[in-house]
Image 1 (cartoon, helix red, strand yellow):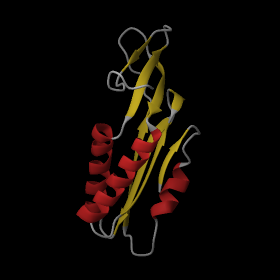
Image 2: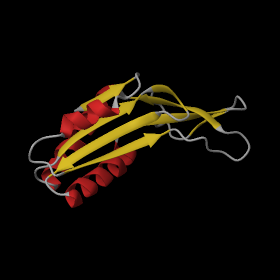
Image 3: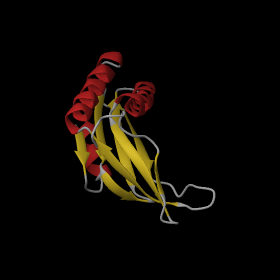
Length: 142
């Protein structure tokens, strides 16, 4: 399961996608918008992406995880658009026969997602200002 969505993430649905009789472990990572900041707190994060490339890269990650940890099942859902503080921005569920593989694959997936998938975020603060925390390469349209 690979999904980019503008809707709130149904974590239960993400978990259900990886549950199977041969899995003895299911590990879930949730990335959540936190109220961060020294003077003004984060009100929301806004996510944009190059959808075709992001979906293709997420599929590659899923395939690579299955090769690195045979028998794992992975589901990755990432929010797009404006996500208020306290809400989930990304959910990754991994099931495996044993917990070590589930933990390792899940950690690897979120780390690789942050580096390889073209999803950019802008932080909106409670004082009305905003700033890009990551953005498309120069010359790329958002």
